[in-house]
Length: 222
Figure 1 (cartoon, one colour):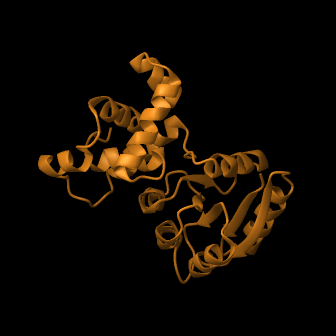
Figure 2: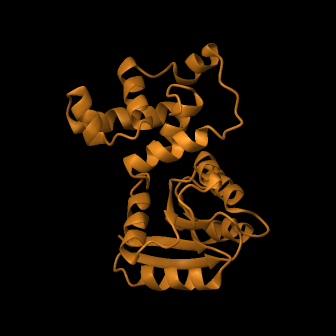
């Protein structure tokens, strides 16, 4: 099945370069481009891509706001944020807005294609070590107040004790295989727990689950 991609970046060379690299892949097709966030939102509505490669800094509407609008309006398109620096302060905001991960602009052709495939499959494009480092770093910058204990309980009260435990381990950056080893259960069991966590909390993927855990203070930065 061909993965349909939209590239949103205000730099023509970036758009053209990524387009050439991705169209060379037999399972990926670039169906459109956008030069700013507003156009990206409109193009997603017109073209229904599977994945949007989204630059954060763009005119008219930045990548964060564009991501928020796309996620709110479209239940299928996944957003993969493009950034120059792996510890860009805006990356955390983009993840909170609904992005499924981030990719450096100097990524290789293989990394770019693999990233698109991972996100299209519904996974988060964040290696465990990167998840841990990124969210720990930028949860410190969040202006959200710490939730009162009663609010925390209400936020994740529907989770079972085991699901809460799995959520904490996700936020700590562990993969399904690592969580299964830690809890001495089958990997398939962990996948089931993760799916239930996402449904109960109304989240898109494990990156969003990790962000939720930090903001609900289930896990403390650092």
